[in-house]
Length: 225
Ligand code: DX5
Ligand code: ZN
Image (cartoon, rainbow, N blue to C red; front, side, top):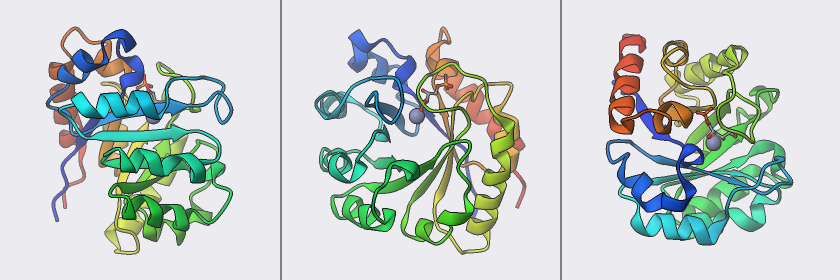
């Protein structure tokens, strides 16, 4: 099956006072990436379910919720229930079996995503991931936009790509952190499907043009089947 690169601009780099307008500037994106931070799992604080619900009501683009929060078992299902397309929880934050949460999220109507921080290995999650729809490989330490891409995580991307291509997993491989014109090709070559980009999209004068340019660059570097 042929793959195509997908772009998820991160609203973390948008103007928080104009979130409806900011989603309208990225109509050509595949998903709008929404970073929920709780000042516990990560040092930073953004917004929670009421604000995401308001974004969901106006966004022309499906929401990709990235929950950088403690106790995802308690909080994540609400994001699926409000209509998010994909809800990603951090493997490091799960207290129970992440598969139970994946089933809950899917039953509530969203896709289920599992995120791993740069220092978290993929190996222990190979079986767990069989019940997930997306794997989010963090390419910066979660918490802040505008950080530098960590190329050392691409080994995990290559391994995830191999597990998908051999049929062990059926999921989208997503990367988050430091994706821009200088780094997207290496990520595409390693096997990413969905590219999160915050500052590279919202820092551009024309976010739509930035999305198109990133997508074209990634497509150029996709491995030919
Ligand atoms: C970081 C967030 C990212 C962030 C990416 O913790 O998860 O989604 O918005 O921003 P850039 O693309 O600027 O690195
Ligand atoms: Zn994110």
